[in-house]
Length: 202
Ligand code: SIN
Image 1 (cartoon, protein in one colour):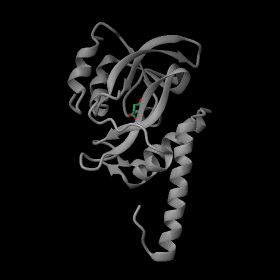
Image 2 (cartoon, rainbow, N blue to C red; image 1 turned 120 degrees about the vertical axis):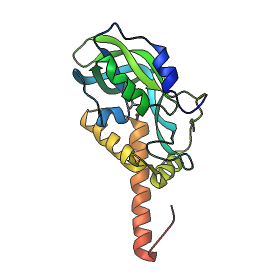
Image 3 (cartoon, helix red, strand yellow; image 1 turned 180 degrees about the horizontal axis):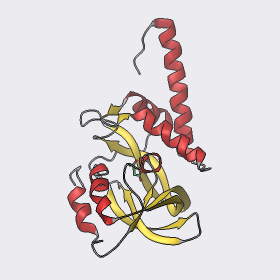
């Protein structure tokens, strides 16, 4: 599969006869909408967990030096909290473009904070996409994130803003919080080494 999933996503569902569509955000879509929405509220999905296992060539890295961003993996019994948006179908073009690096629109049921259950879209990058990086230790992922940046900014900011947003929503995500700790420790060590020697490569 090519990196660019835009064309596939446009053919996946036809929402032309619908007034609105629900979208569930679990990564940057939590803390940075960047599109108009009709409604927004916290929500959760069942059977999925966040992982920093997807390469980013277009936002938090470059084709030569991809960053590491989130995708979802299926985990039985798991629950993943995020932000649900009700949008007009016309907004999807821009979101397909933003999520084009391997993410496929997937239909999933969400549980909205107000008690409603709705069927909507989630952008999931699976292991068969060309930008997939897969598992690594927390220390390795933190190092990768610390050294990466791309057109949307530093990879570290993606992780730290996400961790902050999850905390503000009362979400516990052991994977994200472990990486946040690993990144902070790495940055503290790097700062201390810089103070001692003037410079240290990550
Ligand atoms: C999402 O936020 O729902 C998808 C992954 C991302 O854009 O970070």
